[in-house]
Image 1: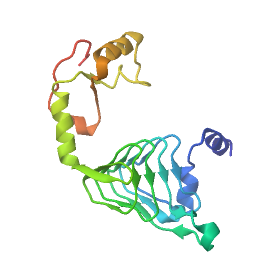
Image 2 (image 1 turned 90 degrees about the horizontal axis):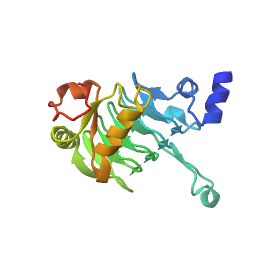
Image 3 (image 1 turned 180 degrees about the vertical axis):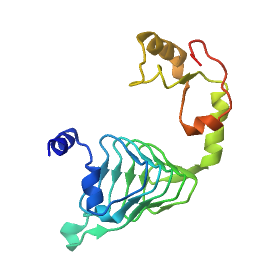
Length: 199
């Protein structure tokens, strides 16, 4: 009970309660802070294995916008496939289907279908790339950009003030860099060495 109260105060989703009410949740799914999963209709939502739903995402299975005029609330299933990444602040509307291995950009509004392996951004969501081309672009960029390991170089991973300063300096003037880690990085080419990288 105390845990549920803390979750409510922090605006966190009580995933266990939603699963008990019918939310279909795959294995190893990450639900970020401040995610809203439609608590009124969780049985209409499914999220596949290894998917990542990041901070501030809203997943709606109902739309009451015309209720005052019509007396009806529209409802629809939402299906988020396996290995889908949903960026911060995205909105997934009733009836949306996101295919396996897709990427939904931050602040994107998804209605309708997103084909498997697609990268979508915008409002409404538009396909801008396929995931493999998108990943290859970043693999190549990582061979020329500063790259650090997660350990010692990220929040919650023991980052020091010196490492924070080194990242700020390396990423000045709009430059981008990368943190190495996770199973995908095992397939990535070896990046260019960077001073301060403790590999």
